[in-house]
Image 1 (tube, rainbow, N blue to C red):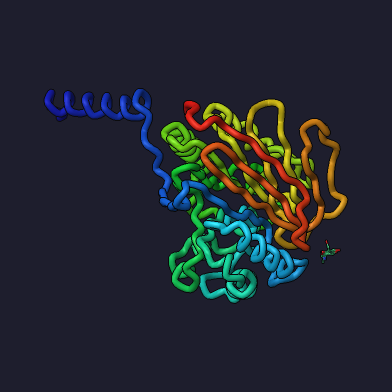
Image 2 (image 1 turned 90 degrees about the vertical axis):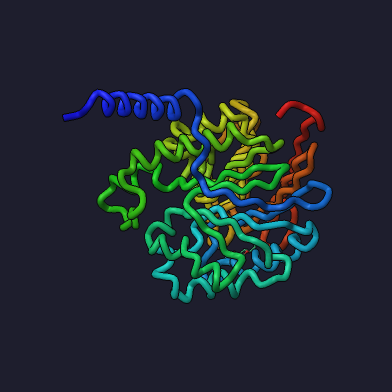
Length: 332
Ligand SMILES: *[C@@H]1O[C@H](CO)[C@@H](O)[C@H](O)[C@H]1NC(C)=O
């Protein structure tokens, strides 16, 4: 028998739960890291994606140039847009690929900064928990990889989003590869929670610049092209919260699309090793600011009033530069 008191309690609890979920937005559940900006409040970092091939396909050359540009720009950290280890992620925390594709490749002093890494679809073909494991952080303290997380660098807030679980074909195509979905199922809950967390994090952010990082493209003219699942399930959240940059890999190229749909800049830095030369579709030239089908990486410099982006090839040559500004005291 449920007493009247119990019924009242249950009703109260349910009402409270309803309120906290639907009326007052819940705070984001994502792990949060603080990264101090420079003394003047500015920040600079490099972005590399789709890289882990034991130095092959110009990975070593790109790493070398990252070291030089990283020094010049006095970078604060490095972002990896995923597909960290080819072809099938890591086999475990003791996989030699961690040394052969990461520790022994990005050796320049300027690259001995914090790395913030997301997972790509190739990483999901191996032992996902291994890449997320603190054991890798003990081996090389630069390494930080989580499924989704927040980096608060005061002037800019970064939301790293686990995009692979959004993509239907990895779940439905029987011909496709085997993925490690432990920790993802039930998939619809995972995606709904993530959407909620990203939305909360962006809404609560008071940073001047809002940057979202994921492995998969939203808009791209490359081989994989647009990821329609993200266009439907992630992009509306980014648009509603006036995100400045969406940074991704997945297409093995360097690309900048400045869409007329919103203020979001779509930046692909997927040229960390093997590039797909010539594999590009038509895109509106008014929006396409850069498409380079070779290897390279990207840099971003941020101040209170300005963001400067540059793309570099495997020789360190600048391929494209772009800047935008906001007023110093404009409302966030
Ligand atoms: C390495 O980069 C150079 C210069 O872009 C290019 O000519 C060469 O084909 C690349 N090598 C590989 C294996 O991709």
